[in-house]
Length: 316
Image (cartoon, rainbow, N blue to C red; front, side, top):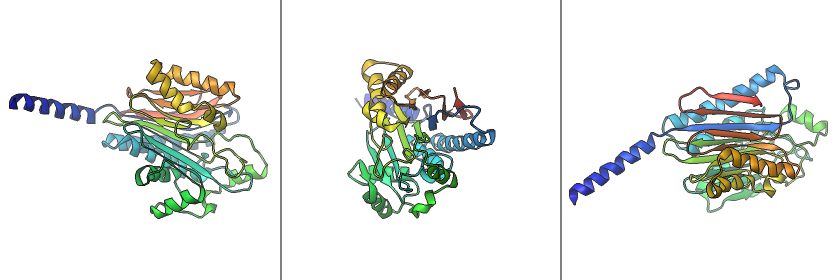
């Protein structure tokens, strides 16, 4: 009996070691939209590609060193929040009243723990506030001043609301453009232990009403992660992604109907399009192969699998 127990223990240790040294991957997005090759200046495209590459490299380093998928998506999204070129964090768009209200969410595929914040105005990195809600509170979603206060209590970086203002976004606001600015950012990752995670962060729609909340901070709409299915982060016209519970629907099609992630993502985006919405999703399963699906002309996106060099794309 002792010999059998020893064999079983050795097998367990071996399996754990293999799991801890499994494949790893990360994918990110910086929004989807109707930009064309002609309208995207080479200089701007270069800057955007550099930011996406930095986010991928940052997340990949976490995974390569044995870090968790949660740490990887947090780190990657934080890089994009700190960039003024995306509609999240520093580059968030303005509301109809010339203010910034930011949303973010994160989910752990191993435990189904999740956290989110909506309408925050003083948190430098909303994705860190979302993670704090998940790990340091008994809640899933905090909004507005309560979320800002919670973040401050947790010792997160707090900034004056003027921090989020960039001249590009302010000029856009002054021109009274109220079209959707699809620059939401997100990340999905698979760590060496085989765990998935997803994170999404946004400034919302340019010119939105005060208090408007889209899909990005809503678990199951803009973000979902579950080891038994996939990790998903969405970007686009949030109202339509909300109405079809887009992120969870993709995962459910994979889990319960056995669809390939690509087919599931395309099917859900067809539902979004049927409601008049546009945007895209990034999807990752435990094989480590990323899926990018979008119904716009372009989507800022990229991935890194294992030690391979990150790849970044914009157009189809």
